[in-house]
Image (cartoon, rainbow, N blue to C red; front, side, top):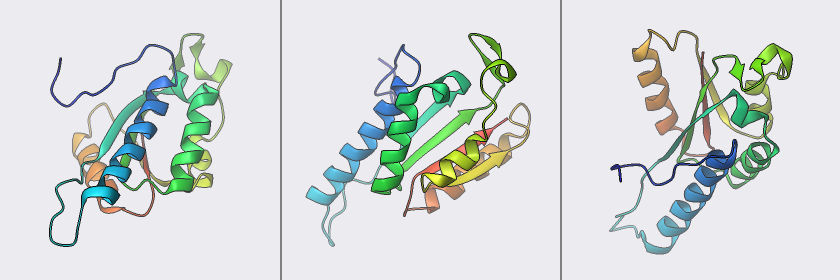
Length: 141
């Protein structure tokens, strides 16, 4: 219904896993159809997730798989606003999410002021697009 949006989801974490699946499909299509003289496929897969999404086990499992498969055209933007359905994340979610994604083999970046520093967000996405050997995780506070 909206150009550029392939999937929207309801259950927390499901969208993250869908993005990994789409990135796997994109890699398969590139490997199957792209040739040295013709490369019609080469899109990026983007997803935006929040604190509650990353608390769900499905996102951890999907992130681990994405790192293992080195899905270099997958870019995740994490809205770290310290809020979940339960309230402040301090109630139930205090892990170092960036360290977790590094341990999965992801390229990671942090944007400190996501409310005002739009240039930093744009620069982080541009940097992530240059990293082709692993997925990218951008924490935006």
